[in-house]
Amino acid sequence: MKMKSTLFFAALAALVSCKKTEATSDGAQSKPVSFTDTFYENVCTWDASGRPDCLMAPDTISAALFNFMNLTLPEGKDLRNTNPSLLSSNATADIALTQASDVYITFLYQATSSNNAFGYYTFPTGQAPKTASDIKKITYVFPNVKSNSPLQPGDKVKIGHFDAGTSIGLVLLQSAWQPAAKKPDNNAIHFCSNDALNPEVDANLKKHAVLVNYAAESKLLIGFEDADRATVSCDHDFNDVVLYATVVH
Image (cartoon, rainbow, N blue to C red; front, side, top):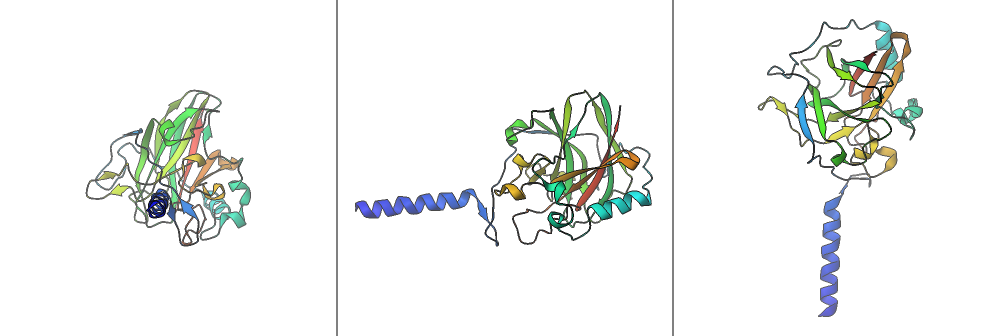
């Protein structure tokens, strides 16, 4: 009887363990991350398609910028092979402000069928969040970014004025836009610029955002990978959603 009980509890422990992580087809794993302590708000209202009502006069996108994007984040090419330095452990996609600044986010490009939502959060520079509970507020900027997005390249939003010593973290919520409800689902999977907040177990797969300085036009190019990187279907090209930040002191 004692042996049967031991076997029962061992089996139960194994079952519970299996529920904690999701094994993918290539043997890697991801663990769900819940942002239950996070409050969500919007930069502004939006229309039924998710197009923000506070868009400014659009930026004119130069051919040089598009060429730079295509060279830096080529479609369907694994960034680990084409530009591995962007994925180093020292690389960060947070925007660290050394002076009080106005910050603008401009939509540039997408290559995804997912109805993603894009937003940001802030934290003191040097005190990056380690868990989801450290993120007290996420602000939606573009609630609907997808293949037939209501956004056009150059669409721009001012996200605010920030003090020196502030870092801006970036987040893409996978397939979050709900067409019927006309708003994002706050419970969607979050892919953040802070690697510690992402679901992949393998530290080498946790990065989902890259930040590239395009000095020629004083823009910070932001590229997102919107698929779980532990899955074999992920192409790791980090151009599923591409935006850029403009920082004005």
